[in-house]
Image (cartoon, rainbow, N blue to C red; front, side, top):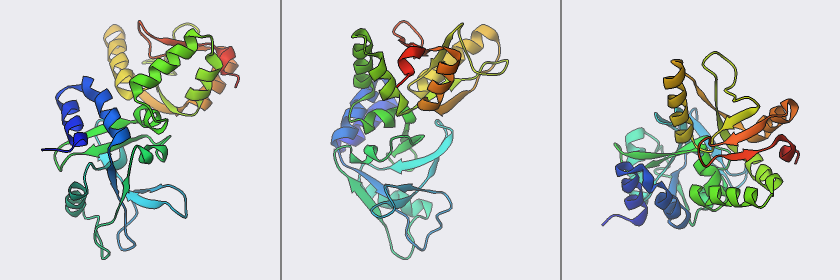
Length: 248
């Protein structure tokens, strides 16, 4: 029988709507991250944690995310085998760090993504928005519900403070510049939502639009200067943040 985290990962591969259950598992189940030894090239690696207690970890290409990201494993044996296939282990042998109860994600806030590896042929990408939610100790669904509740209570500035600490996805206009609706700038908490919206715009305009990952704090500065509202996840349940609320 597979560990709970593996079962949650397999469920996502079968049905994307199972992602919230995966987030719950990631916040409760242990995960393993490979570390690079001194005898292995660090050309494609990233530093996890501070200079003293941190470590260098390898990066792997993720086609869905379009970038090299951190590989994360649901079991030690899977990591050891995967590292052998990829040539990660040098003279020191297999090296790794184990993280319990979502501790890893507190170190990954702001990272562009991660790749949950089931085996050599199967993996589940986590986008920057998912990492930001997990770093706060909540699932993406719970985080969005919290943001909605704050806006409903008239606490837009608190919403702005939370979003300012994370990266968000934006879309470019097919004719150049950033996509905008009148005085509203659409942004997305997750890559999949940005891609679905981009596909919708492409069908309507006949032109392709590209998504980009930006720091929300920098986007706030542009919105304040132009007195623009932010439309978070455009659609029937969009969250709207006024430019006045971004003065935090």
